[in-house]
Structures are given as C-alpha cells and as structure tokens.
Length: 327
Image (cartoon, rainbow, N blue to C red):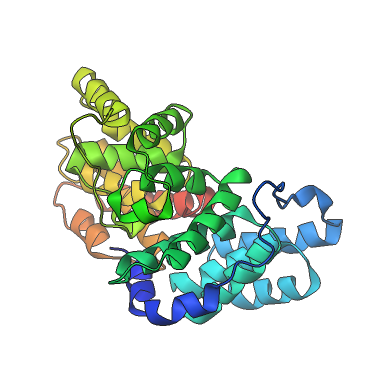
C-alpha cells in the first residue's frame, strides 16, 4: 500500500463529506464537457509551464510558484499539480485536506485527471464502509464515467477493472465478461495502467499496491477470462513479457513500473541490468519525494557496482522521474 493511500485511508471518515456531491456533473444522456488547453490564453499556458517545470525538477519553492500561477491563471492543470504537491510530500508535508480541495477545484473545471483521482478516493472510502452506502459508490462511478468520457486512461482502466469484482455489484456495473474484454482491449491499445496491472498479475498474481484496492480477479465457472488468458498465453510464449509491459509503462512515467522494475532487476546476473534497476529505484524514490530509500541503498551496497557507474545510474533515475513524470 502506498504512503498516499495509507494517509487517505486514515482520513476516510471525513472524505465523503468533503467530496459529495459532484459539482457540474452532466445528467444522464447529456454530453460531457471536457477541459481543453486550446481555450486558454497565452499567459495561462506560460503560468502552467512554469508550475510544471518547477514541479518536475524539484524546485524548492515549487508550492509558491504554482500557488502564484493558480492565482493569475484559469488553467485547472495548475490546480491538479498543486493537489499532487499537497499529497506527495515531495515539496512539503502531505496535506490531505488541501489535496482534495485542489482536486475538487480542478474537477469543477472539467479536468479528467482530477475526476479520476477523486473517483479513486471515493472508491477506497466505499470499500472501507462496513455497510456499503450505494450513494457513495455511485458518486465515485459518476466521477469515473465523466473522466472516462474525457479520455482519462486511468478512468478507462479503473472502470473496466472494478466491473469484475463483487464489491461493486450493488452499483450496477458488475459484468465480469465485458470487464475482461475491455481490459484486454486497453492493454492492446497501450493503456499504461492496464500494462502495469497485467505485469503485476503475471509476476505476483496481485494488483499493484498503489491502486489502493486489495481485490483480486474472480475466477468462476462460466466467466470468460479473456484478459487473463491472453496474459498467460503471452507469458508462455515469452517469459520476459511482463518485464516488457513494465518497461513500456515506465516509458509513460508510471511510478509503479519504476519500483517493480527496480525490484525485478535487483537479482539480475547482468551488471548493466542491475544499473538500470538502480536508475528505476532512484526514479521511484524521487516520485516519493525521497533523496534515497531502502531499495536504492540495497543497490548501492552491492559490491560489484562501481561507484562512478552507480552515480551515473542515480543521476539517470532522477532524470527519468523529472522528464517522464510520476503518474
């Protein structure tokens, strides 16, 4: 379980009161409004670029830069970056209340990434309820559907993935067969969330920890396991298939892929592969706002890694996080 999700889970009792209801949600049958940067002024675009550059490169006063940018720009992407700053602990101590507040503001401006993150938070809250409240779950689905309609890769994946689990049956979205088919389609279309999910299932038969949902795929008579059958078939033909999925996801900046690859490469007999693993370990640490962590230290303590090569790998890892991001 990620630090972020642990923090959120400890504050679930107040989250729903903060999130409900969804502002600006289109009624059933209405078209969904999606944020487009094409409508922004040149000044707004420049302010977002300044905030994004500071965020990506770990500038010490990133919070101030982005806060000032948000005050003079109507670009909701700045609000979304602020939400990440407030929860990641990379530039300051995590602040869950401010994190959710910024997400809500970005969501009100129809930013799909914000809707997808809010959906994730509410879905986790829903799972924590002893007596599942359908209004809570449906609120999450509303956010998820709006984000998916605007093309959010995370929302498209999550919508397909949760439809396979009994936990969400009350919400009227339970369809194991169609969920499998959609996951396979997303995987083949290069959805990075589906790639990480598939790779982790092959490697460990479990979901990525950062998903925050500790549920596993059902396997019942009559279910068409097209997604998992496909994964198994590809793996039987190529044992490196899950690693290739993680590498592709890492190319898209998926922090779960960084960590998974670092863990997988640590035991490699090939020195270059271990150095690549160190780079990913550093990228994963960078995404968590850490100068180093146990995984990075384990690599640095390997006797057969030269100091100069290790320094280069660490530098490369920081660059990976800076340029690809931490999605």
